[in-house]
Amino acid sequence: MKKSILAPILAIVVMAAVLLGLNKGFAAKEAALNDQELSIMLHNLLPRSVEFVEEPYTGEDANIQTVYKAENGYVIETLVYGYADNIRMLVGVSNKGNVTGLVVRELNETPGLGGNALFDVDFLAQFLNTSGEAEVGNTVDGMTGATVTSKAVTRSVNSAVAFVTGADVASSATSWGG
Image (cartoon, rainbow, N blue to C red; front, side, top):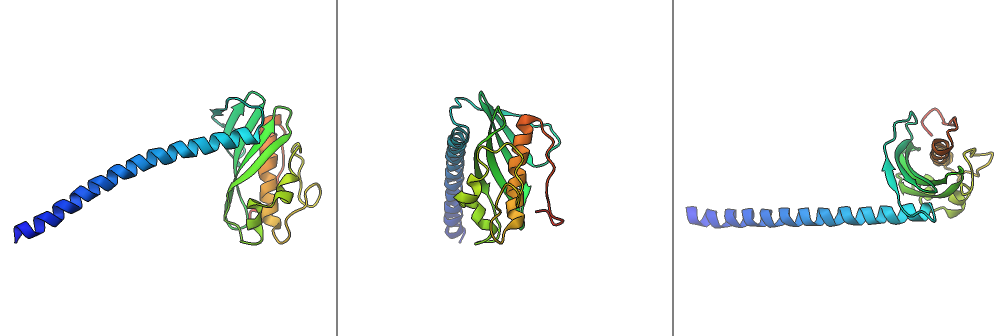
């Protein structure tokens, strides 16, 4: 009876060890791919940059998560609450304070409304070459049915520009965070 139980237990232990080894190998590969993807995005968001250095952020703007410095500007990672959840973005800003590129990295807004911020090129393109004075309804046309998300994206861009220029940018948040 003991022999019949020992073989399956041994097989389970061996398979668990194999799976653990594979998991560690895949985790290293995934980390390398994530680093490569980030590098490509940083270079696309701040054209003509050669090297990016992650700098510690010690400022008071809770929207700013990470700062990547290059010779001709910065790429700022922001995290701002939208209508349903946080919106994570990367915003490229030149040393002169102009937005050179932006991409929404993570978003869980309402599909068909705020969720469109992930790929609405016309909406996102409005921020290019701006210098931190963006305001929904004034300088930026918000997405239809997604005012809160539009304002959250705008706050992200304004925070990124304010970091580079040293400006004090007020948000236009609604009472529920958008």
